Length: 221
Image (cartoon, rainbow, N blue to C red; front, side):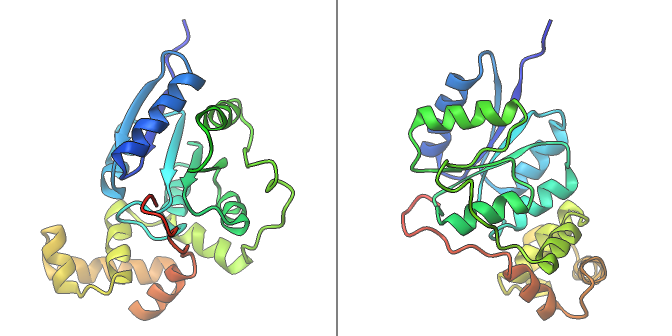
């Protein structure tokens, strides 16, 4: 007897999560769906459900910046397919997502039938992009690809610390947010710099910002 497929839906907008659930139900019968609304809860969910068949990932979810969340997920769970679902619908954004390891990119403006079709295609092992985008050229440099690989080597806590550094938080503030000592944060920062191959916090932030994506103009990101 075939086990039910398991799909993680990671988006901070309840209305869009509901729409994705509907699309998933149309695409896959008897599917188990797990919802998360931030990168922290997604990290915990992926650890608990490391047998998930697919992650549907919002590019602009709290706790991540641009393609950093995608690169991190792919580094930590290379065998788990990730499909980016986003309101950022520029062709270069879609193509870069594929270069960073996504198995597909679904625009949030796509009708439910298209979303269902895309999910089905990826579950069958295909890479899915809107037809008009599929033949374009991507723009990820070898340096960006290398940095994405290094991001994937960070632990969940190190990734959280790096994202807080990109927001301009000081060690003391990060320690407060994560409920740990300032010495622990200093140790995390040292490890982050070593793994990313940079010499300062500023360099780490600059490198991470190169993976940024302009948020869409609409409310749904």
